[in-house]
Length: 176
Image 1: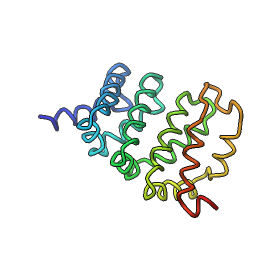
Image 2: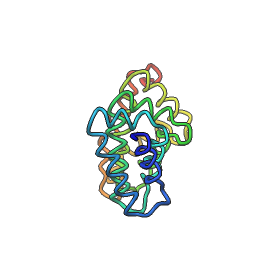
Image 3: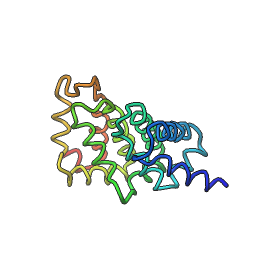
């Protein structure tokens, strides 16, 4: 019975679904992150994590905000961070960097928080650092964004970008 409900949630989170349905489903997923059981359920299913991640740029601003809230809560737990970094269909690190780079993205502060959460545990920090190093926006690019006053035109302050960058000081390569 529970698995049927979870499978239905995945279907309702479809990016091409009706706005009201996927908005309600995304809000439900965000609410599930508030309990250890709900968080465990979400992190155990790559299809749910991927579906939530696909909604971060939804045209409905509240849906995209709920998706980012869910991801920040999921990434705050080490098991959730591991699950997000293990996704095969989408690279959460690259997606969050794109959100931060986009001067018009209204939820860039959440993206900074998600990256800070993902890079907090040392063993995960190395994986995130490698992805940043291999990606189009290197660490230097993120430092540049952080140093710009009012970089984000939608009011995101990007304060947690500093926490994310400082997490790399756990690593010898990050300190260099």
